Image (cartoon, rainbow, N blue to C red; front, side, top):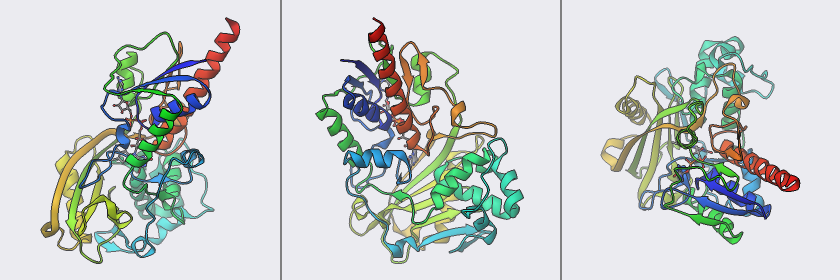
Length: 386
Ligand SMILES: Cc1cc2nc3c(=O)[nH]c(=O)nc-3n(C[C@H](O)[C@H](O)[C@H](O)COP(=O)(O)OP(=O)(O)OC[C@H]3O[C@@H](n4cnc5c(N)ncnc54)[C@H](O)[C@@H]3O)c2cc1C
């Protein structure tokens, strides 16, 4: 029987552990934290915020993989009335529809964007500068980057398409992502995976193939390899609970600069106590900007879209997600240019900043499957030659 060690018990580590165990390997997972899930953890009540992922996109590969194994669990659909309450800030005013020029970029017939040009230059050629800027800023919902227009046009276009598809691709696991993590952990457990929490690994084991399913930052330290870098976003997060008021927006997208506010209780009432709404503002900030700058922009958006929000606040938290929101690709690069999964000597990388396709956590998922198939293939080969 093949043996595999997985370092990290987030979405990538759990995916690697399950797929390796399904293939018959004897798997041990080491997770530094006392619980599994990594960024996919959901805070214990009363305000059930997610650290990282919120939306599970049904157009991606992890949707069908999780579904085949019955791991998604109950979903919180967005009621149609709530869906209609998406608001857009454009030229300082709140509106219900995107500017016409931006719609040009969302057409099915829109040209495939190139990899080697920045999105703003390419999209300006297609739809004019106003539409290009609006589209770039809208895509921040799946990018978390302060300057989406400066990224590779092909990269931004894929995220824009996925984030604006109708019917929407975004689905929300009821009660937050903790339920998905619990089901994945139970599946791993039932397959005989040994899961050791509070088990930080400082030295790579040499007796088994290893899947390093940590953040890229942690992998860089663990492997002692300074080449393990790739750009990501930096985003100020403002979590708020507000007393309920009829007519609040479901979400507000800032088309004047990158930013998004979403009321997650619109689709899932279980995330906050009765009579309260749970919101999160996600405002990407530039390297020279502070958390306070991002929070100030979130407050401006709230002033526009959520009447009397300041008097309704029952809970509030501010933070910055730095390098934790997945890979972004600069012009001239695509996912194949990111740090490779196979590091040699039986060491494989999985995570959301390595060389695998997909949007956000789909990259963790895809790289985990690649890592395991390479690890098992290699091991099987070694055994054959032994
Ligand atoms: C604000 C925000 C919003 C997001 N929204 C979405 C979204 O809507 N949809 C989406 O799909 N994705 C979203 N993401 C991205 C998503 O959270 C991540 O892509 C995904 O959770 C990464 O999973 P992972 O397993 O690769 O890494 P992690 O979740 O970081 O897991 C790595 C694990 O490794 C452990 N570890 C680290 N070092 C060691 C060590 N030395 N020994 C043992 N264990 C170790 C850590 O404790 C951690 O548990 C969002 C992220 C953020 C921050």
